[in-house]
Length: 390
Image (tube, rainbow, N blue to C red):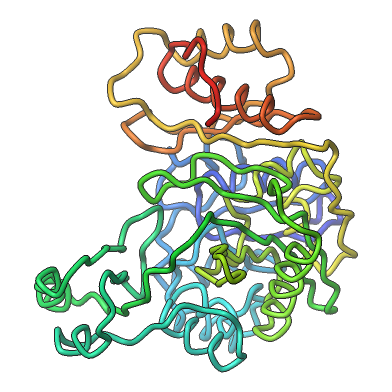
């Protein structure tokens, strides 16, 4: 408990943009959010006064950090599971706990559990040799690193048996692998929910996520042209996963939509890129909800505040714009006075997520066009005049 405020202290491991935006939500709630960051120039330490420097793989650093916190939660899933079990055994409140979080840390553990629960997933198999890949026998297929991949990293599309030669190299480097069916998807969706220790659940509207080269570039809320039945099925699935795995906090269930329904792609047990739209677009943002959940407060309402909300990621341009970020922001607001911009305090480099922009409105096509134009301007410093969504 923070003696100055009388409110609990939440410790967030990781100093990225998720911790930065969680800190902003904590300010409004009167909470003290402490951040464990690797370096002082990460996004969260740039805005938070309560920062400890240490590595998330260092158990002693985690112990020291947790000693001053009422509950421990995460900006990312990369804390070693055995460290979390050690902290839990020592009386630290870890939310989500290691028995839940391991399903977001290890894709093979996740696939096996979801299969046990009878949930819709792609065909999959563990890969310990090239022979396992040939025995799987589906081409094309998707080879994945079981741990550590994100934003398209740790994923390889193998079109034919000749491509299997990559397996030996990856295994020699110590990368645990699995292979999955290449799902004939129509588009990608995400079901975002939250769950408290008490067992209360809440879900936001189902969204569509648009990916380019494995990186999310847009989130459309609610997902266009989705039947009420499919949306309810996706939300019920996500709430069941949260309950079965004992998740506490925000859970994002990434989904493939196929001609036959939905298939679970991946899980994330923390605030997620697919939920950034909720800051301005929902009654309760995912960041406030995550704090409410890990503190076991009653969860907030999750309905959308407009018929159409679009979040577009601002990705670093291939070449540095001639115009500085501050001047680009000035011009953007002159053109789109209703744009909501979030910069993460990151140095710009090609393809890096340096921020996002959110717009709300009545017509999805119009809102999406304006959000895409705004994000491109913020990253490139140029307007795509005449641009239309196709």
